[in-house]
Length: 177
Image 1 (tube, rainbow, N blue to C red):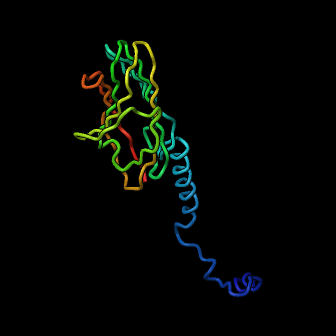
Image 2: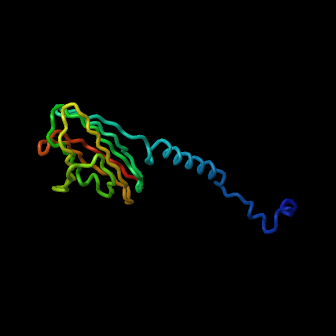
Image 3: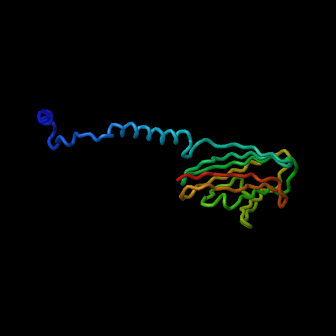
């Protein structure tokens, strides 16, 4: 009777086309589970693009709030904001970023503009001038992650009064392909 069943099949479809392999019925549920795991990982931020992290650092001379995205996708744009409130007058507020932290990044904007900038001794230093006690300076920098393999970027953002160290903020960014 198989010949009757296949006699109505479209031209070119034979009985061997309908043979089902031993584990074929498990392929579809496995594909669905795999699809849900990948999609769920992306939706919950495990694959980048999750929410930003806000952390406050306090020392006797200043309070700094850092807002950044800890997980980024390669090629994506990012934004980091530092809100600095000194507890004493500062003659020349300096933000110094370790070079390894910005390796493989293009920094496009730093606002407000620094009075001067330099790249010496493994750091990028930006001088913002005087800031009075209790005033708030909000520094925003944004850029783009250059395409590379999976990696973790680590470094410090140091806040200083010219050459006098105020605090160092450890920052770690995971870059996914």
